[in-house]
Structure formats: C-alpha cells, structure tokens
Image (cartoon, rainbow over all chains, first blue to last red; front, side):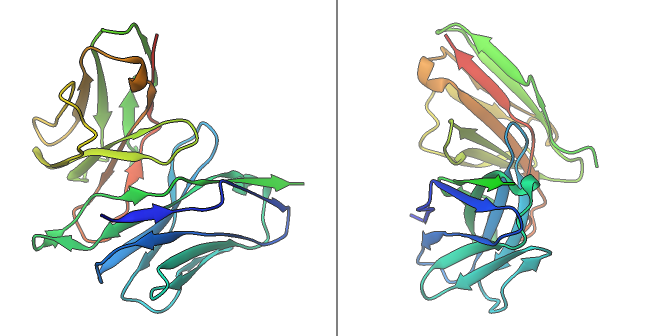
Length: 119
Length: 114
C-alpha cells in the first residue's frame, strides 16, 4: 500500500524568510503524481503544486517550489519570501498514474504540517 | 466555474440518527470523491465515482455509509445510525478523468454527533 509521511507536525517561519516542508512516500510504482495542497484555517483545500514522477525538473509556481528526489522517495516543498497569507496546513499527496489501463483517481494524503508565519 | 459545492456546511445530530450530505461537483468534472478529515489530520479516502459508477470504496467505509451518484452529476453520502466516532469534516472533491488531473475540493460538511 502506498503511504505518505509528513514528519513535521508544525513549522514556523518569519515573514520574508524561506521554509521547507518535508514529505516522504512509499511506493513500488514507477509512474505516479505528487501534489502539495494548502488548507487555510476554516477554508477549502487548494492545490499548490503538482509533480509528475517521470519529470526530472522540479515543479515551481511563483514563490513555491519542490525538491523531488525519486530514488529517495522524497518530495519537499520550499516556500520563499514567506507571507502571512501562507499560514495554513500543508498536505503532501500521492496518486498512481494508471490502474487497470485507465487513469487512477484516488489521492492518498499525508498527515499534514501546520505552518505558522510570524510578522 | 462555480467550484465544488457542499450542503449543509454544518450538521449536528444525535447518536443513532441518519444523516445525508450533498455534493455538487464542477460541472465538467466526471469524477467525484468523498474524503473524511478529523481535526489535525490529513483527509482519508472514502470512495470515488466516475460518472455514476462507484469505482472504489475504502475498507474504512462501514456498512453504515453509502454514497450514490445516480445521474453522474451530484452525489449524496448517507451515514446511518450515526456514532460519535463519525464526527468529522466530510470533504467532497471533483476532477476530470485525465491522468494527473488535480482534485478540486469543496468547503466540506462538518458533522458533530452528540
């Protein structure tokens, strides 16, 4: 079974500084996707970044970037120039690409990391 | 794009009662998912549909839980004979059926069983 582990229950960062959130996963599959989702307090979950396992290039989106190490099964999220609005719970998630010849839907989430941003 | 809509936002019920939640996905999305999230934890997968077909159901989903998507549009999740352990946020999400298509989540229904 695929598992996703986020070993940091809580992290904090000063505004404008950089923080890295860790994620490791366990899988025997070779084709899969990895995601980072953000869940602000009492608000809905939104996608931050997506990484295809077959791509060596790390995904980036503005101040957010990932460090994807396929051999180590590691997928960390770096937030640069942190802003107060980045405060949220962050979830790492995994999905295999195909099952039974068709694209697979189920997403498996980690336990989450609560990020606090200090002004 | 009106987003994924869930109703109600909050539900308080007494133990033993039945409850039903509704989810309206993004209109062009043919996949619909249900997850359960307890405080401070990651979402746990319950089930998902492609159109009206229920493709996978978690072992966590006891016989008291049933989900339907009769016309391939909105979905309902029913919990029969609720227990205190059912108290959680129930999240609905939808996506296209293309590989890698991200899930778009609703605001969730918070269930409290007293």
